[in-house]
Image (cartoon, helix red, strand yellow):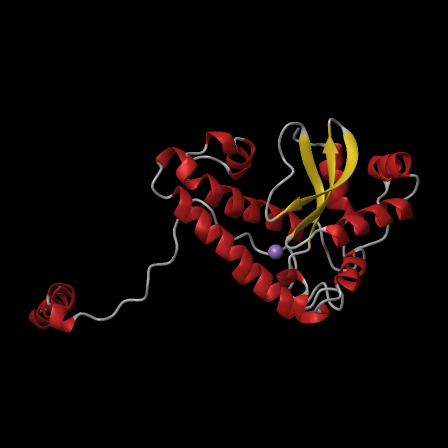
Length: 239
Ligand code: MN
């Protein structure tokens, strides 16, 4: 039973709620709406401090929570006004960048690339990672580069040679392993190319802990690589 008192209370509350919305003088300042869009920040598959001391928690917090989030926010903005783009997967956006309308192509290239690269980056690291890859990937690295150490040397060299911001990569190209680098957030992910392992050498990835010593950061990365993830990409590439 609704008593008269309850009914009055309800009416008063409703009236109050309406007045907040309808009377400009009583409007409450609202927090900006949460960013919406098809793309969302994936959770890290480990704690922020899991990669210590090689990659510090503060760097992970800012890198994942702010830099990666910014790529996603800007990607969502770029596709927001286009229903077709909004419904297209990230992989397709990157692979078929030529078909993205010119007005937003650069934004999709940079921010879609940033989203893809960072999503992969987090997955290819883990607590107590490192060591050497086993199985088919290990054998293929030995065959292609001579030894794991030779591969490490070539990959590290590519990471050191990136001028400005970019990434060093181990990729499959036409089913052959290759070490390459890319500028900015470009993804080596088209025309038969498939990224297996990428190292972010933008300064935001290492400057808090390593400052100008990129070489120490590159060397430390080898202590956190999740070779299981890399090997499974090698075993089932999406070429
Ligand atoms: Mn980054």
